[in-house]
Image 1 (cartoon, rainbow, N blue to C red):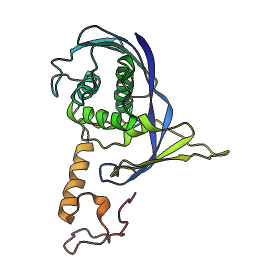
Image 2: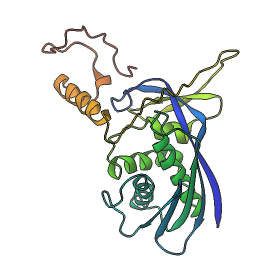
Image 3: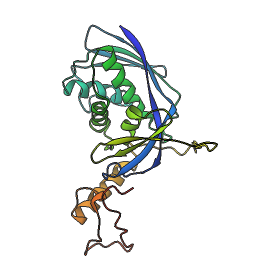
Image 4: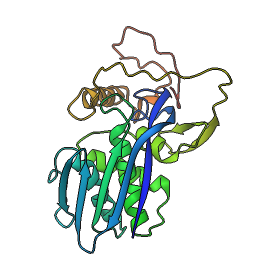
Length: 245
């Protein structure tokens, strides 16, 4: 049994760094993405091929920290699917991509999401896309060490053609917003400025937001409605309230 699956990258129109702060985001999917051709194996080995490199992972031994590099994203999805009770087994997965890596268009999330829909497809599992968002996010957090929100995975798994995805990252609720551009176009420009979540400043930024929320006595920064009396920030709070961008 085999097949071919595709998961797109994304561009975020509004809402940078607001997903892990419980706010709103508005991404849309790109035509470019990650494609995987896969077949089942009759054992617990995950054979992964990408860009001329082959990695083999024993799913019985897959655990956070046990797999390194790009293969951690793939093995993490398989491990998290199994941990969630979905009986996936071995497979041969051959990946190709026309997404630029490190350009901020979520190539890692596309890799995870392509893996998720391939493995569930190969094993005939009907897993709701919303559940796959949580599973792929957990894979990136636990196996790749990136404390990401749900923006990237949601965009890759939930977006529709010619629509943006209005996503409340606190509740997980979403709506599809038609992109009526008419004669206008959205330009996506690769500036060649390298972007990395793992090992970059992303984790530091999230940690600083979490410290700010703790200082203000709220769970998420989107809960801030009034200036805190002891807030040391010299900029007056706008009182954006819940659901802030």
